[in-house]
Amino acid sequence: MARRVDPLDVSFDEYRAIFGDSDEEDEFSARSGIVVDVGADPKADDFFTFMFGEDLFDKIVEETNRYARQMLTDNERLGRWRDVTKAEVKAYFGMCVIMGMNILPKVADYWATRE
Image (cartoon, rainbow, N blue to C red; front, side):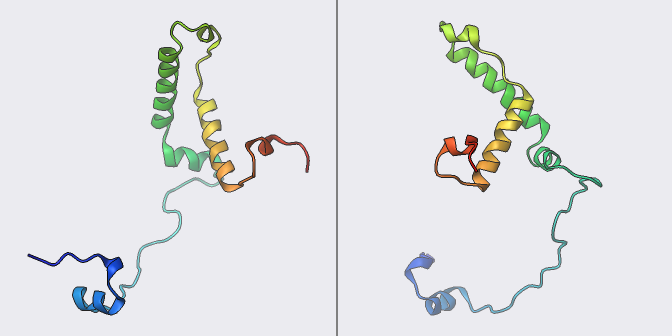
């Protein structure tokens, strides 16, 4: 039976003795960067749609609206519920991405008008 080794419990020298000493590095030869055709004048939405796909947004819209109807059954708020649209879901995802890139101390700070 092979000895089970936790790499965090051995020194570098012990690890090399167990798993071999390979100082060889394979040369990277693949094309780097964007490897898809995004057209001559790509916009942020083009990349977003490419990454997530229209089908995913359609499914999120469908399931969000279905879930809302299930949860709001026998609830007075159901009368005020308006189905979300694909544009709204995309806007929400975009806001999440931007808020993740530009982190502010409080959520309210994203809507502050002061400079």
